[in-house]
Amino acid sequence: MEKPRLTPRQAITCSEDCEALFIRVDGRVLCETCHKPYYDHPYCAGQISTIGGDPQYYIHVACDGRHLKL
Image (cartoon, rainbow, N blue to C red; front, side, top):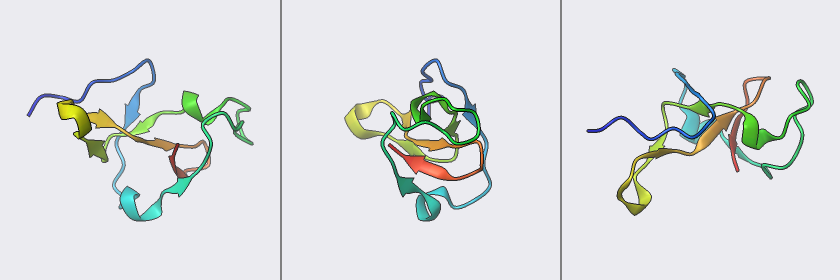
């Protein structure tokens, strides 16, 4: 399997069950810790979607460790 495509954000490795932990949020909401939009936070490398044929990360990790599905 080819390594998933990354956008300008980096992916981090996570050992948790991210699929069970994520919460849905708007990507434009600002993080309480760094004050950047959730769109600008790193992806969780443990969760990959192959929708459309290309593997892509889809769960972001906030500064406080919460897993976010935008």
